[in-house]
Length: 75
Image (tube, rainbow, N blue to C red; front, side):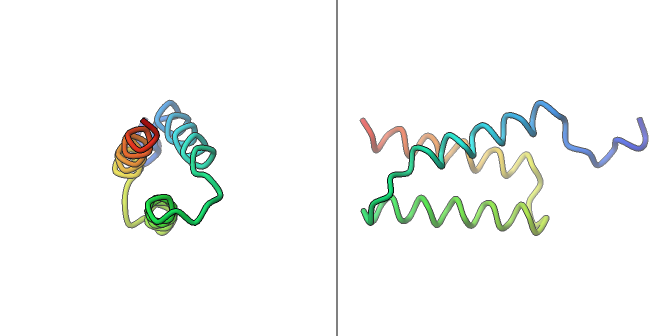
């Protein structure tokens, strides 16, 4: 158990990956200003997570917020 101290839980990792993939497929390939802003936000989140500037929980929360924003635009 001590060796698992800094390891992200498997379910959280899977959830985060699913959210990332969902957001990626929802973002259209257009130059609409709002969609460009969302693409930039996603790229920023990915970069922060890869550079270990944020933990997986904050990354997951950021993806949640981005997904909510995308869902509100579509309605």
